[in-house]
Every structure is written in structure tokens, then in C-alpha cells.
Amino acid sequence: MKMIISPAKKMNFDTDSLPWEELPLFLDRTQLLCEKLCSMSYAELKKLWKCNDKIAELNTERLKNMDLRSNLTPAVLSYEGIQYQYMAPGVFSREELDYVKEHLRILSGFYGLLRPFDGVRPYRLEMQAKLAMGQAKDLYAFWGDSLAAALFSETDCVINLASKEYSLCITRFVPAGARLITCVFGEQQAGKIVEKGTMCKMARGEMVRYMAENQIENPAELRQFDRLNYRYSAECSDEKTFVFLRECSGNQ
Image (cartoon, rainbow, N blue to C red; front, side, top):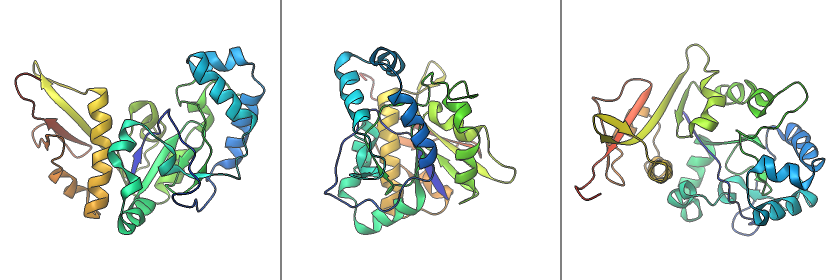
């Protein structure tokens, strides 16, 4: 069993906390993306990144000094978004680190598919970015089925904790006989299940931590997840979708 999560836009550089162990699986293709980005003008990059000047300047400078094989940070420690704050890998025990090393995979527009201790450099490239690469009109076409093929070569069961933007790289290419279970974290409003962005990110991070703390190997065990006021809803779930509904007080 593996679980997949999205990356985060905000990244840090940390070569001290824990050592990186391996280079990313698709580093040769990442090198192509890096070369493409380096060939673009500041204006083109800012448009691609959809960001302000401060962020564009930071990431342009990163590109100038991008060495994909040195001064690397373990992927699981390199992202700083809400999901990673709630996962809190920096305070994992050795047993929990070993668990995520085996079970966690991070999807990335720049690196493709990352293991937690793959060495990475800070970058900015979302999977939705309109970046043409040769015959590929965008990054979805560039990566094609390669990420799903690599993932399902390791397992026949994947827990999807990634956003739709990233999970599309996997959900479109699930092989026959394999199982992909998407976790939905929502609230009931006017008879519908509504997912709220920040709460979803928090819950996804908490789910990774929950799985690591409890060393979960069977998807059925996920139904016991009860953090951040979420509870599994058997009524709303099926074999491919585990729905967790948040219990909210009347003034929320």
C-alpha cells in the first residue's frame, strides 16, 4: 500500500536536519524541465508561475543556481505548506520515518514522483502550469502515464490524499486489478458534501501522521481516523472513496 500527496508551493532549504538518500526517479526529465525554464525570460516565467515580483525574483534566482545533484533537502522536509505542517515530519520518530519512507509518495510538476528522502532543490512549477515541452502541450502530457506506472509497479493499492490537480496524473492510469481509494474530507451543507481547501490540507496532513503513528497496512483501518472533528461516513463512502465528514458546531 502507498499513499500519494501533493507538494506545496512554499519550500525550504534544509541540509542539516536529515540527510537525503537517493536522487529522484525521473531526474533526467527534471533536467529537461529545468533547462526549459532557464531558457525563458523573467516575464515569461512570471506569467507561467502566476506570482508577484517578490516570488518571481526568488525563483528566478533559484533557477540560476539550480544544481539538481548537490545541496539537496529530503523531499518530505522541503515543503512548508499547511498539509506538511499538520503532517509534521520533522518530529516523526524513527519508526514513523521508516513508515513514510516505505509508504509515502509525493507528486510534483517538476520532479514527477518523489520518495520522502529523495534529494530536491526548491523550485516553482505547478502541475497545472501551461508549459509546453516538445510535442507535449502541458505537464500532464509531458508526464503521461509514467508516474502512475512507477507508482503501481510498487503496489496494487494506493490511498489518494492528493488534490485533483495532482492526482489526475495517477487516476487516469489505474491499471486493471489495482485499487485506488480517494479520501474526501468534507462538511454537509444543504444536502451536499462540501470540501474546504484549508481544512482538506490540514486533514490530509493529519491522515499521513495518523497512518505513520499507527503503522497502518490495511485500508480498512483508515475508517478509524477521527482527527480535526472528522469521522468516517459509511453512508457516503464506497470501495473507491472514503468520505470523512467534519462535525461542526452551529456557529462555525
